[in-house]
Amino acid sequence: MACDLILVLDEPSPRVVQPLLRALSGEIRWVKIGLQMFTACGPDCVREIADQGFKVFLDLKLHDIPNTVGHAVESAARLPIHMLTLHTCGGAEMMRRAVAAQQATRPDLLLLGVTVLTSMGTADLNAVGVPGAPEDQVLRLAQLATGAGLAGLVCSPLEIAPLRAVLPASTQLITPGIRPSGAKADDQTRVLTPAQAAAAGANFLVVGRPISQAADPAAAARSILAEIAGRGTAP
Ligand code: C5P
Image 1 (cartoon, rainbow, N blue to C red):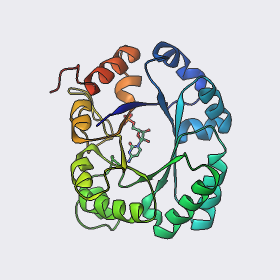
Image 2 (tube, rainbow, N blue to C red):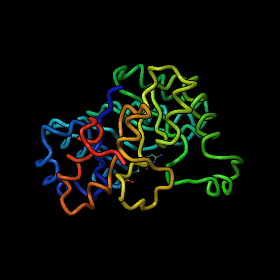
Image 3 (cartoon, rainbow, N blue to C red):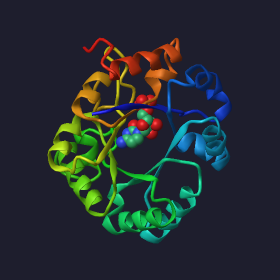
């Protein structure tokens, strides 16, 4: 299965990421703009980075009542983006309204459901009132999400195999929680290496700090691209 890298731009402004984007232009096709940059710079930063030729994954993780999320999807769909996230724990009706808004405005936009954050382990999940292990909750939310019409999911790489066993093969699986062997886990708990996640069947790997905090970020990104393509050293 083809697997591609999405470069995380968790910085306060597009200016900070320009040196890395210039260095990787032609090698990286996808970038992720999340809450940090979008809260600081808004839609302008999305347009600026899309104008440079990158495909933008806008990771807003929408989670509100169905009417509000539906209208937020309509607004986001007017931006030059190719992926947008919402939280599946917002429920089936919220997701149906989001899908209806996306279909009516941008049928080509990939709407992704975030299942359980990759920073959360069993104890964190139990503490917010969800019994069992993350995998059980991911499977439950994934079935709710695909039933509501979502074409893709964000999950930990550890859940790719169990999800692939029950979901249609066309479901796009996007996985943060990627750490090259030897890299710090930071606040992520459910992690795999790029080679392991690609081999498990992820469509896209989302990688931030292992690249942004490396001594040579462009080299770190190239090494992950090589590992995904099967040219790197798997652990
Ligand atoms: O720096 P790191 O590689 O951990 O970045 C992971 C990115 O993926 C962050 O931008 C985070 O917001 C996002 N994310 C995540 N877990 C999810 C969904 C998104 O870590 N379940």
